[in-house]
Length: 65
Image 1 (spheres, rainbow, N blue to C red):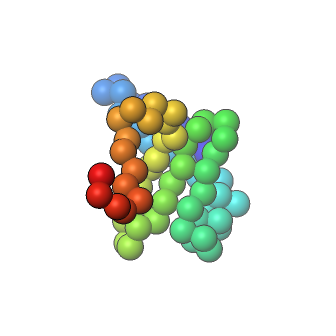
Image 2 (image 1 turned 30 degrees about the horizontal axis):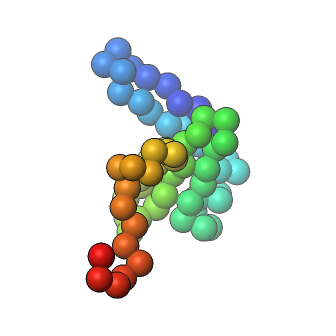
């Protein structure tokens, strides 16, 4: 995946043929070098980046809390 930025520092993403095929077949592809993933949600594409700061993310598995 190639990530480039325009003059306003807005990113754009260019997938390889293999990444495009993986995205179409599975709905997801991830580039470990760029640390960027692309997901297909319905008819839209979402760009995701992993993070390790779980203080800002609360997971709820049910129960009273």
